[in-house]
Image 1: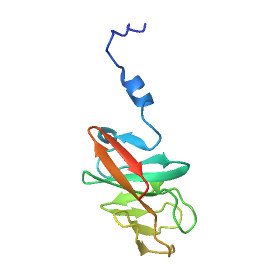
Image 2: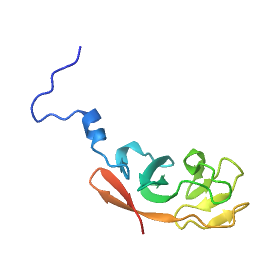
Image 3: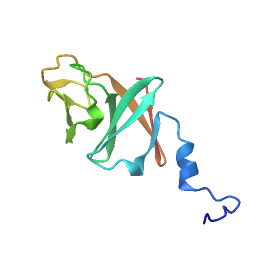
Image 4: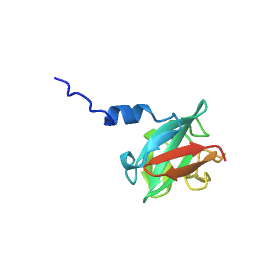
Length: 119
């Protein structure tokens, strides 16, 4: 049975519904993990590197692999398709087959919420 909502009380479900598609809860993205958000219609991967948040395009520049499904080791993301490696702090290619860097995005932290924006 559902509990009644007391005036002024906000459920976590309602809070999550208020996030914009380019926002995320900081506490739900643990160090070493990745989350996908969108800036406009662009999918963006957000990375937690030891408590600092970085964001890049979510698709690998080699074959459009989903980087949010890749392995994050420190600040290096490895694409799950062909093992291209990128530095998420700069977008630079560390190891191919990719030869084009990732587009990076700005992450703004306000309270418990992170927001991703174009640079």
